[in-house]
Length: 139
Image (tube, rainbow, N blue to C red):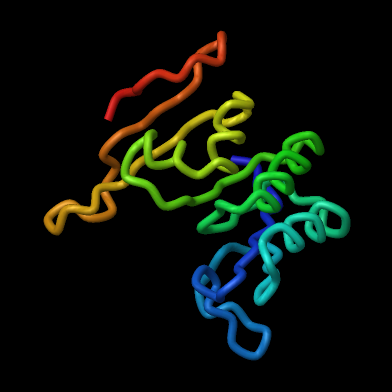
């Protein structure tokens, strides 16, 4: 499998756990990490200076985050992002996320279980068909 260059925006240090500039969590050899940087600014910096194939960030939700994601998509970059919500309805309550969902640029939405016995396991998968209509996928 061919490797990809990944850029991670780790705003609060929860992904890479940087210590004195060294990631304590192994995110891969081809991963550039920006920590202590707001997500929207970090995504734009990665796009302009690091040429990632993929950008990853957690807990997106602001209008600025969504605009940076749209810029990344227009630049031909894929993304992996997390957001808080237990359902599609929860995600749509955030106007910025609802705007991103309505663009049809999202390929998959994965919900993880929050139940004690299955915490972190995939509970639902949503995707978009060729008409940009959302459908519930197979668990």
